[in-house]
Length: 79
Image (cartoon, rainbow, N blue to C red; front, top):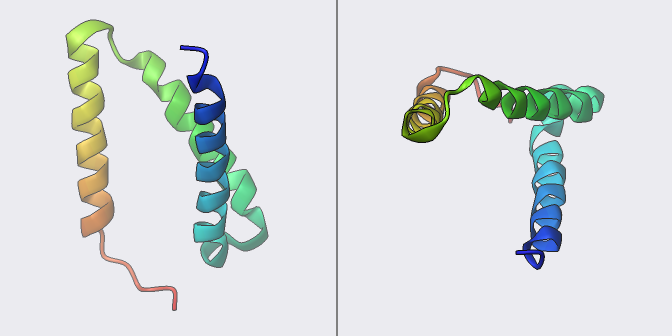
């Protein structure tokens, strides 16, 4: 579906800019560097998953586990 290319490109740019704006109070001027490192790391880590249903299952289990840990991790608010 070639019509989805501009939509996905725009959503990627919006996600990148939103991530920078959200993390700026935490990391300051190094925020774009850290966001790029995290984006490349998460993208390239998917190549280590097996193909097929098992890889799909492992991806979603890992995503849910990471989301759970990020919400339950004790931390001090920035503000």
